[in-house]
Amino acid sequence: MSLVCYGSFGFAMVGAPLWGLGMGVHESGTQAALAHRVSSQRRASAYRLFTTGNGIAWFAGSVVIGALYQWPIATMAAFCLACQFAALPLFTRVAGPGASAAR
Image 1 (cartoon, rainbow, N blue to C red):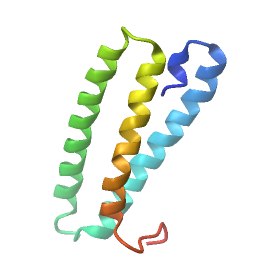
Image 2 (image 1 turned 45 degrees about the vertical axis):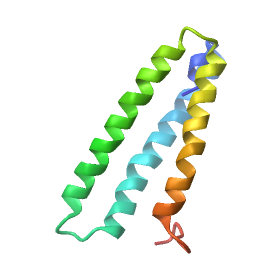
Image 3 (image 1 turned 90 degrees about the vertical axis):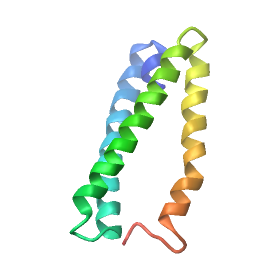
């Protein structure tokens, strides 16, 4: 998303497909990961809970990014990167020891 906001057409042409790819991987990957960790009887509730939390976090991040538009775009990009790095410990905890993409 950060590349799209830099203002040049070239950045937008590179950034938009990368953003779309990231969204596609995120949507399909999280559903597959939840399917392996939750029983089929509770799967719909797990999807609903995850989607709700994801939506709330997305909204909160969007509010912060909106407030950052008054500063240079690099500030917004730094915030986005910091959030992604801050999520890594949570991701590793959820993935657990010995987790692999082949699960």
